[in-house]
Length: 104
Image (cartoon, rainbow, N blue to C red):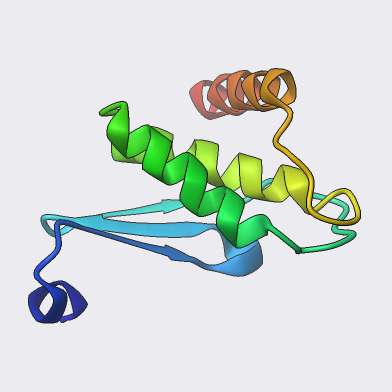
């Protein structure tokens, strides 16, 4: 319904501790969150949006965009205040996520 009203291609909704929902051309993806020690949520939404925009601009698959956005948003919630994403930590967490998914 929202895509019909707004005439856009991709819907991406953060679901807090439940992950990120993505819908594009009737393909639905839910990217789950990683368990985290949440200290402060300042900047989490901006981080998710920024990483998603970069992923779209880089033409990454939607599931990759959702996963990276989710990991980055979670990462900044583990520290107080508005902090930058730690790229090396994001890369490490993404690799660990991929290994975990392949093991299932």
